[in-house]
Length: 320
Image (cartoon, rainbow, N blue to C red; front, top):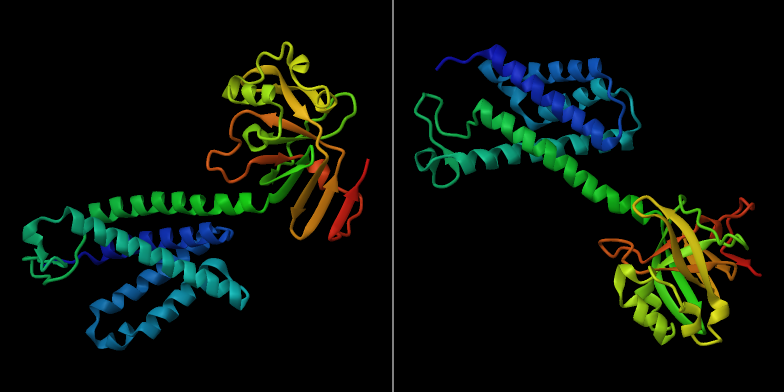
């Protein structure tokens, strides 16, 4: 069998380059391409030892680990021990995912004549029995692994990013408490136009059982709950009328619109060990779910947890 060493080296260098790039991508390392390519070239040199029987000692796992360490040092330079070990772990993680993905694809596409005991491929070209993916399988396999790895990474990271902005929200209206999770949205600048009190958005279903029957009927209408507000204030009991506000706002899809808001007795926000209590806030009733996955049921106005005091205290009270 003819072995084209140059093609094997180039293929191995391309794979090492992609493995190092993915390591940098997942670890948020700065990519310096000449270092990445130099590290890949260094890693490809190791492959030469497999064609030289006199260098059998180079096949030991300790030597392979040493080459991996040197590759990462060339690619990313000096790092603290912990950061370097994290890079090494991610490098091997990506390599194992790629290897498993290519092996699985080769096994999936192989015919019954190429499978021996359901585990390995049988070749009659003198190369013996073993796993031998084609160049096409390598290309397709790595492309699939690249796409799936990035999708999986974002699927894992997105909830973590959101988690950092979540808080426990306790809303008290007419003496009844409702507890939910809220997203602190720094882009929420909704205020009541006269008093300039901040407006926090809450899913209306969450507090529907507290509200008067006329409002519960409107909430049952779903997205169209607040489209027609004619006679709204006349339909609610007199003791509830001072609590209600109409908040104008502008949306991208519908232009100018109106949101019904309720004045709560109290709102308590707990985030990162700090507790914020305020009565100077309005609760905007949103007739549709705020999060498709139900991760949060309220959007917290940032003004509720902002303070001129830079020293965060376990308890802050905002009375008024």
